[in-house]
Amino acid sequence: MILILEPNAGQESTEYKVLTGQLDRLPGISYRVHREVGAEVTLTEIYLIGNTAALTLEQMQVLPCVEKAVRVSEAYRVLGRHKQGDDRPSSFEYNGVKFGQDSLNVFAGLCAVDSPESVAEMMKALRDNGQVCTRMGAYKPRTNPYAFQGFGAKCLPYVFELAGKYGIKVISMEVTHESHVDEIRAALQATGKPTGVMLQIGTRNTQNFELLKLVGKQQEFPVLIKRGFGITLDESLNAAEYLASEGNRKVIFCLRGMKTNMGDPHRNFVDFSHVPAVKRLTRMPVGIDPSHSVGSRSAAPDGILDLFHVAAQGVVAGANMVLVDFHPNPEKALVDGPQALLISELPHFLEDIALARQAYLQRAALAARHRATQ
Ligand code: PEP
Ligand code: MN
Image (cartoon, rainbow, N blue to C red; front, top):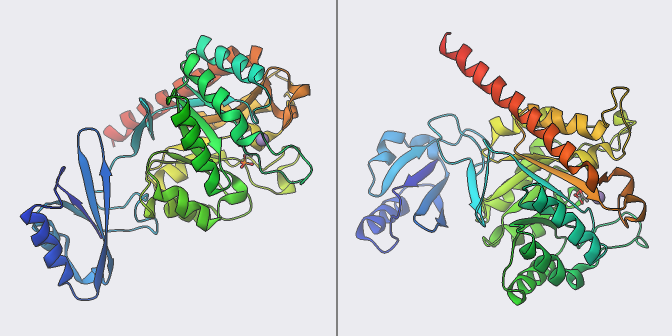
């Protein structure tokens, strides 16, 4: 059971102390407090663990400071969407950008940072096309130990400075180790925080529980977690829950295709039909990564790249974020050149996504109209 407290319920107040005193006396029940400190309000939720079946919502709702009690109906206690009256938010804001189950953000950018020139060219194109988010890989987990592993901390200062110059507010950047988070924090500090970073957990680390705990413990950066490429959806959603259970609930869940040759000729088996399923099961915004799903620039006979087709499919199904690889010169890219879109294709891509988004919004309005007449 979750107790949602009144906004700004102070931990020092007498009411709060009465509440925790009563909780301490409940037999067989322990609890965990989550506090989210916002600019204007601090939200507190208390998670009751143990034999909560014996408690009624009515009994808990009258306790001091409690605004509402919600019975947990899914395994994902913090991020889940529970059946009875769970109207907890499905969005968050970071560095002035809103992320939610009802919005759409495009993160077009470099799979891997390879030079200041590529970064500048990419970011300028984003700025010229009204974009404020991007992806920039500095730490690259590679299958082959001899392959380029990313420039790491060395490239961070120019990536952040250029982001500031071109008005980029959020950069999705994969981390594979605790030290990477420290390096990102230090480089942001040293460059005067010209931008923000969303920490990306790659598909190879979806079940790296110690990394999840570390990234979940900090609340400075939101997290984008990729679905594990060879595990069930439930296992991946539990991985996301690890982040939230440690305190960070600014989490986006990103589909990126499953590893199986059933998906041939695509690099991974595209799983974007799970966009609505994840939105139903959890309150996380759901992203799609068409680049790592499709893995090539193959086009259908209609002249539309498979990459565009699957991105549109995810957006038509209500995706909230598109993470997509671009490169000014894909033949020279150090990682994943064959799947990179050209910078000259950015306006076309964005227009195509806008069409798909329009179709999704019309479909949602249509469903609402029909629901109203049922
Ligand atoms: C990436 O987005 O750069 C990446 C490596 O993706 P994934 O973890 O999904 O393979
Ligand atoms: Mn890649």
